[in-house]
Structures are given as C-alpha cells and as structure tokens.
Length: 294
Length: 329
Image 1 (cartoon, helix red, strand yellow):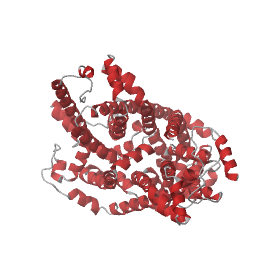
Image 2 (cartoon, helix red, strand yellow; image 1 turned 90 degrees about the horizontal axis):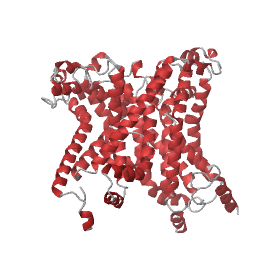
Image 3 (cartoon, chains in turn brown, blue; image 1 turned 90 degrees about the vertical axis):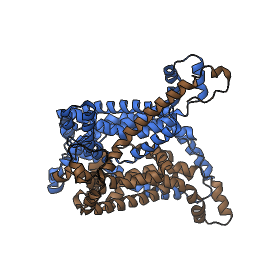
Image 4 (spheres, helix red, strand yellow; image 1 turned 30 degrees about the vertical axis):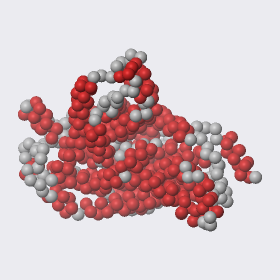
C-alpha cells in the first residue's frame, strides 16, 4: 500500500513486498465484504421485484429468482392510486425546485452582491433556520396552512417546502455568486450590455453550476419528504408517492405481498437514484454542504 | 459619499464570526438602495409565512389547550392555560421514558455509526483501487435510497416469514427455530438492533465518504515522521490523524446527533406506519401525539422540549459552520 519511498532511510521501515501484498489482499477481501453487506439490501429489493409468486411464498427465500416475472410491477401499476401519487410528487417536486431556486437565487444575489443593514444577521439566520427540525413545526405549519386554506392542495405543499429549500439555496449559492468578480459584469456593461443583459449573459451562466447543485439537492429533499406532504394533503385525500408507498402495506393482503412493496419501493426511489447517478459529484458536494441526509 | 459611510458603519457593526465581503455596489444593478431589499423580499416573505409564523404559533399553541376538536369543531373551547400544558406533558411518565429512550438510542447510533464510519474510511485507504471504486459506487447507491424506503426494505429483510436475515441465520446455525424469529416482537430488540441497523446503514455512506475525504488531508510526511519516531500505528492515528481531521469529526458527530435524535421516517416505515409505544423516540412520539392523536398543544410542548434537548449540539454545530465559513474567505 505504501508507495516506493524516496529516501533509503525510509525504505528500511517499509514492510517487505510479499507481506505487503498479502495484507492488501486481506484488506481487499474485507473491503469487498463490507461493500457486499452494504449492497445486499438494495440487491434484495431489486431481486424481490422480479420473483414469481411461487418464489415469494416458498418456505425458504431464494437468492436468485427461479424465473423472472414482472408480475409485481404489474400489481403496482394496476393500483389506481400509484400513478396519481407519482404525478403529485412530480408536480410538487418540480414546483418546489423552481420556486426555491427563484426565491433563493434572488436572495443569494442580494447577500452576495450588496451590502445593507442586517446582511450578516440574515446570513446567519439562513444557517440557523436550516437546523429547525421539520417535525417540530409540522403541527403549527398545518394550523397556519389550514388557516390560509392551503391544506389539501399541491401548491400548499410547494410553499411549505420553501422552509428547507430557500435557506439552503441562499446559503449555498451565496458562495458561488461571491466568487464572480463584479469586474466581469462591469466589463459586459461597458461593452454595451444593459444591466439585465449583464445579469443574463454573465451572472446567470456563471452561477449555473451552483444552481444545478442546489437544484439537485432541492429535488432530492422534496422528492423524499413525507411528513409535511402527508399532513398537509391529508384533508384533501391526495397522496405523494412516499405517502402512497408508506401506507400501501397497511392492508393485510398487501402487507404480505413483498414483491409489490419492493417494486413500489424501487419505482419511488428511481428518480432519486437517477439524480445521484447523473449528478454524482454535485450531489455529494451539495448534500455535504447542506448537511442533510439523503 | 454615502457609500463610504455605509461601508464603515457596516464594518464596525459586524465584528462577529461572519466575514464581510468587501461591500460592492458596482457592476450589475449599481444604483438604488432598495435593490437588495427588493431581492430579499420574496425569501423573507416566504420564510416568515412558512417558518417564522409557524414557530410563533408553536409557542402560542404550547400555552393553550388545542386539539383537533377544539380547533375545528368548537374553537371556543381552546383557551390559554399558561404553563398547564407543560405541566401536563412533563408530568406524564411516558414523556420521560421516551426522552430517555431517545438519549440511549441516539448515543448508540452516533457511537456505532462514527466508529464504523471511521473503520471503513480507514479500510478504503488500504484496499486496491478497484475495490475502493466498487465500495464507493455501492455507497452512492445506498445514499440515494430515501429514508422511508430504507425502512420498507429492512421490514422485508427482517420479516419473520420469508425474511432473508432469519434464513441466513438458519443457514449459518443450522437451527430450525431461528427461521421464523420475530425481530419486532420485543421493541427493545426491534429498536436497538433492527431500527439501528436501518439508520446506520443509511448514515454510513455520508460518514465513510466524508471521513475518507478528510483522511486524504492528512499529510503523508507527518505520518512518515511519526513512524520514524517510533510511533505505533495506533499512536500515529491518535496523535497525528485525529488532530488533523478533528474539524470534520466534530461536525459529522454533531450532525449525526441532530439527525438521529429526531429520527422518524425509518422507524415509521419499519413498523408499517404504526410503531408500538416501545419504539417511540421523541420524533415518533411527537408525530403520534400531534398528528395521529391530534393533540396540537401537547405536541407543541414536545416540539419545544425536543429543540431544547438538542440546543447545545445545535449551537455547537452552527458555531462550527460559521467558523469554517470564516476560514473560507
């Protein structure tokens, strides 16, 4: 594991290659074992979705389906609540990402480019409010939204999600915008751009990586969110995909049908997994910065 | 000029931990004092509406006796009762039981996930490149699984009928009786073993990848020097590696505490939307009281208690973040 040491003095302390290689192999085996344990639940979810009923109800679980079947997916798509709930989630997610980015971006420009009274107070507030547990304000949020007649509507949920998107977007985009020198848009304006031209041709393109990072983060948060959506929508009889999945297994017949449950679990997670695959680097950077579990 | 005076006022006003970027009133939208406020207006309005006002009404509710009935059907029943609500919640033995359980559970989760995260982060530095890539890929996928889905998957893994964990235990031990072992019958096992496994599984990717990245910050020369000076691997780790990665260690431990203390989704879906009282930690308790039983005022008191219990760690975390922010610039 140690690379060839430059000085002979150091080389003396390096273990012989033979032992070294054996050790690397031992570590490799342990590492692969760790990866296998971590991967197993996902493997099991995926493999369960393809199992036939015969495999699913057999006495002993099989580690590989005896034959592949899409019956579980069929069950899920036949469920009349599945697609509407997926549509609700999609609308809420898209709406709250756009809303959060627009509102947050304006705020981020303000704190990054202007000095005004109470600016640093505002920045610290953006960090502090990110730490307010969503669960703690769920009841008053419901009461407030209900008072405004927003419960049971998708728009109400989108608005409620501003509570975690806006502080995060402002906090994260701020550092992206601060790093754009104002000489750049000055130069653009000297070259004949209007103020808005400078904004759209200089600031916006340069902030794009930041917008993608924060947008992906908001997407994942909004897609995964369950408590707020479930509580606010409970009066209107609508559900998001997460709520649908959670309550799918509450009837006895479905509770035992793990094939369908796993198919549902996979379908519901797929858009988030896709985000992780497409924006791998940005996701880990964004989640670490936002300090929120995926 | 007004700009200069503004600048000096601002400089003297802010001497706290947050650095001030040089005030720039140049370039894009150079004129107009109102502009920053106009830009902030949507953010401020929305945060007041969905955060500040609910927070205010959280305290308001905690001093009243509101439940769903008194709220929807007969609002005149809801009145201010002062600290009676607090007395009622704090006088309930179950509340303290839940708080104690949350503390035990959180300590278990934070210690286990930090130790395991550290061990696997160190391991990733020892293995060959392809093993490391494999492990990181797996962890990215684990990270991508939503918390609720994690609970659903583990409910199936640990099912007493057809659950693979029981089956593997049977294959290993050859003991027929473990094949239908019910992991959830005893909440102590269900919570401290199964729920803990769910949460640690979900938390490891962040910790392992983060700690591994932090470990690459440790200068090779320092390690070599320590070894030359005769330090054992453990001593080198204790006195060279730990001090270097200390900031990340502190932050990730604080974060783990914050997440784990308010954990809800994983336990909720693991127990199929109705966790038994033996599984209740403070997050679940809050949900059961506030949403399931619709006791709005009681749950507000519990919310406040939850925030207060986390306050020390929250303040610590925020200060660390501000310190790091100060170093960046």
